[in-house]
Image (cartoon, rainbow, N blue to C red; front, side, top):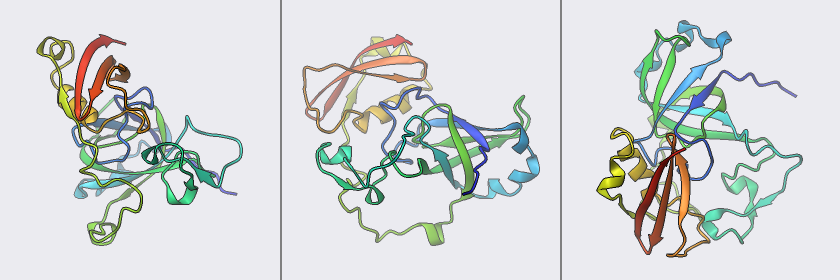
Amino acid sequence: MISLKQIGVIRTDFPEKFGIPRQSGLVDELRSTLVFEPEFRVPEALRGIEQFSHLWLIWEFSKAVREGWSPTVRPPRLGGNTRMGVFATRSPFRPNPLGLSCVRLVGVEYDTPEGAVLHLAGADIMDGTPVYDIKPYLPYVDSRPDATNGFALAQQEGVLNVAVPEKLCEQIPPEKLPALKAVLAQDPRPQYISDPEREYTMSFAGYEISFTVDGTDLTVTKIRNS
């Protein structure tokens, strides 16, 4: 047995799971911040990190911890009915609830009340998630252009046309609008639900965003403060 130390926590615009991109890097417009625990607020620990454009984050599915485990899971992308081996998926329900995300390093801010923090882009992580480690992304070994997707969708699939009425655009900070549109374009709905009359609601950046989907067209219907 080993004991993992939480080195920090990530702050994002997603207080809940619904709406989070299904993989890291799909929505580069998303911004997040990694704040270190007091023990690890040592500038020397980040020496050289700004030389890398991307980082791997190892984190915990802290809202998906369960007793025991199942050898098979139901991937949402397969309609939620087909079982696949847990080690052939990125399901949060695993023997060890650990996640792995590749994010872009936007910058390091050293002089904050919480010590040095990392500003990141493209994270697929819920607000408040514990982070256990950071490693640099190395293109010459980590990139495999000839790799196959298996039963997972290719990145370009599942993209919706997003319409936000002008009067609703005024209800959300303009700097958050591009990220919101990019998140919605990825189609946050469960893949086994397709009802053009149904209104969905997700939490994002302190707002409740309601929308409907008809075919490949998504329309935002309401934006309210959370």
